[in-house]
Image (cartoon, rainbow, N blue to C red; front, side, top):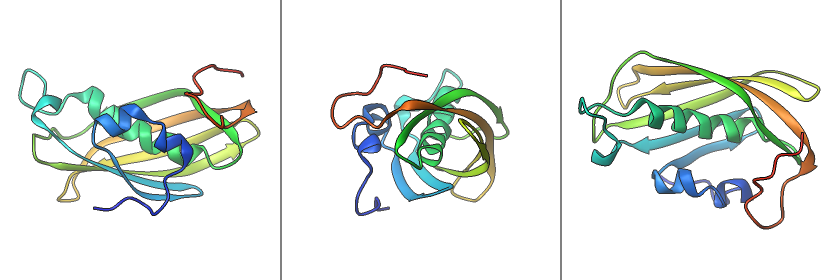
Length: 145
């Protein structure tokens, strides 16, 4: 699967998502799709995908979908419900959409599916838009709410 022709600077700097092999499939206002193939080193002690990595995939789609203007938007909180376990070799896809955005806060839903279309997890993220623009360079790790 291919990445969009031009990844946004936020995703070009996202070392965690790159290390996990995530691929941005769709990046448009109010919608994002990110996929990841589950590797052997992503399994927990039960030989199923570690829940933290399913969360990380959903969180990456959340980050893309909630950062749709010139201000840095961060997570204010998130919840996930795991519905199906997966194993090495499976492809997981997180599809995110904006539910509501008002002032500096937003609400976003992310559905994680496997390659058969079965729902693996449902993620709901709450965002907070900060008072700073996207960094031109550097990691952009300081929070300024």
